[in-house]
Amino acid sequence: MPNPTAAMLVIGDEILSGRTRDANMHHLANVLTERGIDLKEVRVVSDDPDAITDAVKALSQAYDHLFTSGGIGPTHDDITADNVARAFDTPIDVRDDARALLEAHYQKSGQSLNDARLRMARIPEGATLIDNPVSIAPGFTLGNVHVMAGVPRIFEAMLESVLPKLTGGSPVLSQTLQIMRPEGDIAGPLADLAARYPDLSMGSYPFQREGAFGAHVVLRGTDPERLDAAMAELRKAFPE
Amino acid sequence: MPNPTAAMLVIGDEILSGRTRDANMHHLANVLTERGIDLKEVRVVSDDPDAITDAVKALSQAYDHLFTSGGIGPTHDDITADNVARAFDTPIDVRDDARALLEAHYQKSGQSLNDARLRMARIPEGATLIDNPVSIAPGFTLGNVHVMAGVPRIFEAMLESVLPKLTGGSPVLSQTLQIMRPEGDIAGPLADLAARYPDLSMGSYPFQREGAFGAHVVLRGTDPERLDAAMAELRKAFPE
Image (cartoon, rainbow over all chains, first blue to last red; front, top):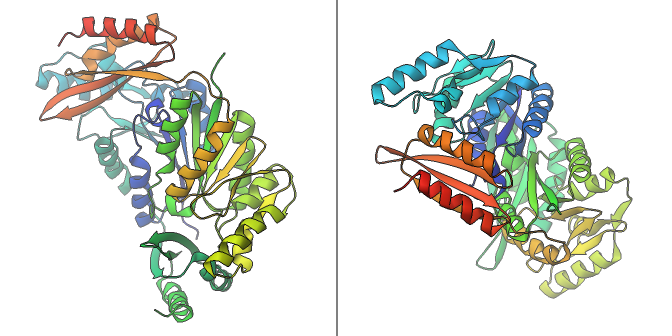
């Protein structure tokens, strides 16, 4: 059975303007790979209602899971929840369970649950809350869309809450061989090997170090024995 | 006149598997912002012909410029050039001008221009070559699509070659105020300010430091006087 597929949608002008360097994509990619869920596509869009709605529709229809990052805070530019609801044609309002979480939290910290903060309790009908152990305001899962915060520490914590609920596949394993030859010398034998192991994916990532050319050749697949066999052939073709 | 718009397409399994952390998106975002070209969307797709072709079609039609990163080396998984050509229904083959560049380079370095390396001279008909001062194998511009390498040093060098040929707009300026208040206290006044300055975009990026909550509020726009005026109001609303 093929592994489940996933996409990610990163929402935020701050990424597209270069102010902030996204860190969540790399984290999600690693976590899903370990879990046997294949991340197939990532999109980054701005804080624009139509851009968010269109991307949520397209990606949630094309893949088994969609993970979103960003735009669920208390400020006017936090419009992710409303546009995920719009993509699914689902009503959204302040929900009692989410409001109760925030009330308890702000009461304890002596802060007021004002209108802005109450925006963080806007949850689409039928969605399941995602636990936020860092700053309480929850994410949510609606259909196959997991809506999470953009702040990396909160994104990672929310992902930890979501993952145990997802059915994983076979973890994708990888083996890497560093070959101190220019990539153009590696390409021919590597293409032959790739043709004989269609169940593995093979990539070559060139580098230059102290004037010498080399490449990391990465073999990826779910069957450890096939990986071992292909790696043995690769080592034979490129002895140290 | 509104600024020209742009999208980016990052091509590579190595990003989606978490092996490699993309660095080109952040660089491109900063460079385009300085130049007054608005980066509106980024997509990351795998080394899959249909995924590349579909994304090139969609993004080159939706935006003024599309910048691609990755997949133009000599190995079997380097399929960007062929699929950009496919998206434009344009023939592609080894082109004499690109072959001449590679021949001169490999002759000088005493390496053979084998079949794998010759793949890097595959250039769609009618495309303009993009200079690669680092490792010679060129990128190209076809229509409004600028096809560049994934290795950050080469991507950056190619971008330097392309930029002077593009018409820029008004550089987007930004001013940032650090406010040592929880974001929920900032949100209300900030929404009021945003409503009165619809020509500026305003974002709030929360942080936590030594147990205290704060946020960086970023005002962005092309008119320095409007930015100054809005920032003066913001400082007044949140005196230190």
